[in-house]
Length: 243
Image (tube, rainbow, N blue to C red; front, side, top):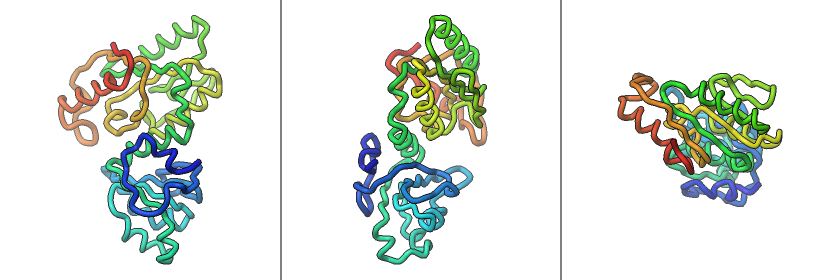
């Protein structure tokens, strides 16, 4: 693929290099860096992955998506000035959003090949997704599901670290579901998943809001109930039909 084709839905600035660069992968873990990959830099609460730019350049990455200037990090890579000039750097406001939108493109917007249902709420997400899955399967439909129990495709269950996995893992799973013939995709959408932009770029066919009570408020989660409510309700702005 050509880089510019992966950037159609992303707001960005080309800092240097060419948008005609060929790419075939998206990585946000520097240990997986290799030639042909786009490395997404993110300023996290615990780790700022911009500091790994020297490592990924040494590994052969030649496309960087960053939230800030990485000029000094590029100089620390050991590449010559001429080699650094051939690296494509794009600036984006939010690395997590960039990861979500580039991952969707990398996996061919596979979610669009299925009817998608997102479920959020303080309580009842897992129960609701399982009920919908059971009903659809009873109607003869093939269903993929993502949530607390993992990623489910037919009889295959793959454990996940989070209720709503990172965006790259989500879109990879969507492609597996579509290729397996799934007509429907049902997933639990957590407030953290919404806050961390893991579902950015997905337009759900149906969004379901089960309920809300004060929860998940504190360090590394939500600063207040108002913030928690805000991110919960974001799902209703990301779907064609909401309940």
